[in-house]
Image: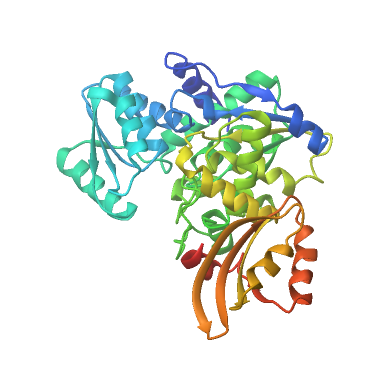
Length: 412
């Protein structure tokens, strides 16, 4: 443990030639809300807006120290790891070939090229990440390059532990609790190993990608059959072998699965209240505060906001999911009579705080009735109870499909 801390501190010191420590900021809004001393470790403020360049820097530094002639580094990534590797290839003056899925948004491809400039080449291969990864590893072996894993590498883990070294220096002591996002496990493995038993940890996974929980239940890493890719920075089907070795003693009660729609609400809260832009994975640690609210009162808590690479084209989806989670927006299918005045009667049932967000005839299911997709927004969730009662009293038949994932996928 002592050796690991020493190595993490050495990695952190070496990073100062590349970028300054990220801020550790006390957040007054969250501290008041949860009656605790809540600090945000702002990894969303690194040069590439995520912590990933730490691991990339340390792994490349170690390789070049052992063999300065190594000049080709290869990785596979659709996001933050690609940008971190690109940035560090330019810094070290080495060549990088970065494989990204064909389906990667142009914004992420553009940013990767901006960070790496002439030092890197981006290759778009495969519709799915597994195909991209295979292509990258095959090329790396053929070209005799150095493959840079996004998380399952001891030097990467050591580099991510520099987050903890900075927290210790900035706070002047170990915090009582640290809340960390988990995807492949590199950040969590590094930070937990650095602080050890001096700190209580809460680890957070997206509900649609609970690879750590699955591994803890099985006693070894397992591959999830399905992963929801919405929290793309942490939606990993299988936690790393090396990272799990460091996280295997974690108790299940200390691992939280955060619902994707709730994460969206947290992202909007941080944007609207604090002016902080977080990607879904970057909001995981803050989102989990509600799950541990009773445990952290009066405590010093650090939430690691791991990334801020958010494409604002996704904002409408985030707002939509946040509204549905908070209960102020619902979708339902209404069986509307096909007669004069029926629509007016329906509109008259709306309350003063209700607004129609969607109105679409789906089909005429019978000669005298038609099915209509309705979306309603309101100011307070309790308004829907009164509204649905008015619909029933008026004899109108409806089906609430807000939480029906299958119907929502096709209709909403």
